[in-house]
Image 1 (cartoon, rainbow, N blue to C red):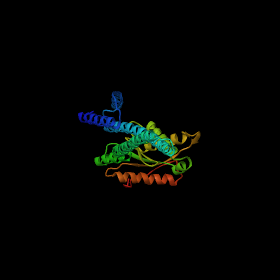
Image 2 (cartoon, helix red, strand yellow; image 1 turned 180 degrees about the vertical axis):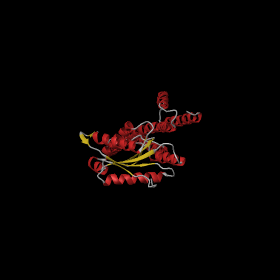
Image 3 (cartoon, rainbow, N blue to C red; image 1 turned 90 degrees about the vertical axis):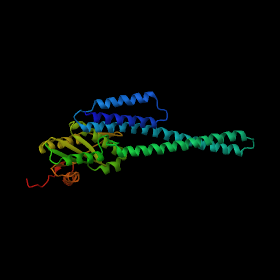
Image 4 (cartoon, one colour; image 1 turned 60 degrees about the vertical axis):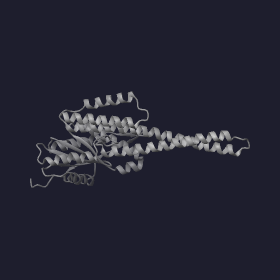
Length: 308
């Protein structure tokens, strides 16, 4: 690993550690120790000869902060709800005290003080929630990881393809696959979006476990994933695609005691010198359409018409 890569990682750690401390109202030494331990574990998994591992590690640090922020957000939302309930209860109590003939002015005044204090706390909690929400949104925009599935996201895919295409002619074959979950809308309409999210996580886990270290998985959007396979032939690409299809249809996801059967359709293409990211994705998308039209749960290819 180059010195510049190490400096980049350390800078990322430093910035995210400060951000995680700022995100917590009562940060302590144990939180810092835990963050550093997680950072060490992440760095130890980096492959020295793979720059994408470094980018993934940097994204992982950001992802860690997002989890801290989400937890803080949840805590403030719970606090907010409790304060609002108490405020309502005290308002009703104050009204009851004002209606009785016994002089309860002192008690009523105290209740008003408590109510005002809680209203201030609610406002403060709302400000923190808004701030955390804005920071999480910014992190989502800048991160290279998909928040739900923890594979690379569309932004990372475009950046990666742009780097590949800038090289022009590359030494080994590179293949791109677009995978689309069959009848995903029916699943969402039947079982709800939570079931849909679980299926996306389920698919991402299968893809990560199936592929080689040098291959890359991206969530392209919605129910679509993209896989980039390096240093393989067209025959090997087809073998990998068919193995993925078999694994997905043979593994069942259990949701609320019900077995969900999932299949995917795949469109594949190969990189050619002079390709752009849009050209690559367009060819793979054309192949995916063939798979859908031909009955789904299959793989088709679309290669460049170069006369060969």
